[in-house]
Length: 488
Image (cartoon, rainbow, N blue to C red; front, side, top):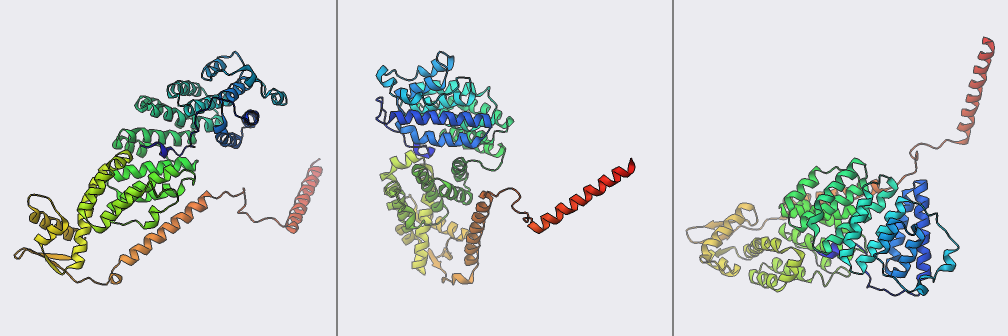
């Protein structure tokens, strides 16, 4: 599993020196803290989401001095959490620590134990440690942050918690200890389910699927996925990851049609900036389409920024398209390291049968009658008894409907039938039906993604109707008042 699949922001190079724009960075962090503080008190989750997005933009400019100054600003100095987090930040000169004193006096934050701000500080320090490649310390820091999260049950913490879950798993994956936290992830998923934290459930389900797939535990991943609670997706990125993992599971289970739909949908829903993720989706989608007997278009391999990464799969597709078994073997050996890192070696082994079938289809189209000896030579079968293998392959292809031919066992020939008109069959109808279903599905998803103001479906009340309604209400109130007077 490559690191690009994570759809995370590009990690900057380590930097321990204070950048020239550090005052603006520190001031921005203070503004983010104020935004989180306001969102926590007003219970507006959108403010917390905005703070997270703002933080990602500032990630490259984080330094030890800025982070240390922000921890002194946001947390109570001398408190347990302040001491714990400050221990991960290297100390800088006092001159660097006072660069923002003029700005810090203009804005103050009440020093109190705000859970949202504590979790945000954990997240900020964790990002800094990962960018500095201090993965062991990141593991300890993320574990402490998860322990703090267990005691919190607030909807304004959910967004911050989902990001902390992600980097908690990433820190363990970077050190090769991903299996250690599987039990903790399952416990956290159960907790978020009980608390109805749907964003946390999405994130943790994807982390668990990634954990299982990292160790090739596809059966356990499918069992978890099938039994996990289902609800409408809240995060487009998490839904894209889910579709990618689902496509991988379906591919291993030989359900190629469903796998193709999931992988293509994941690539389409992924953000444009997530180039590595989209490359991985396209790699698996290409293999699945080849296993289905389809040949991907050349434009798939010429997408911007993907030409170099998809080059091995382009040559593999060319070998499958030609049906040349020798060329297929040479490509598989040439890019063996690439296929191993992508974990597609097992799928490429499955493609050998498709290469043979494609070559046999080309032979069937080219020759009306050909001996099985020549078929074995053209397919370049290297078995001890190539003629018998060729006869077996031709028989299976005829039975599966891959070619329209018969075998003359007496003379040892393969006799191809005359090619008919494809438009006299149901294939064009099936192709159009699949395209129409795809367009309708995309339209329905777009409609579901729209946001409408409340009661927008109701007809707006005109001024004349409003006056009539008010007049009727006044007459009714006057009539009720007269009845009350009569009773006295």
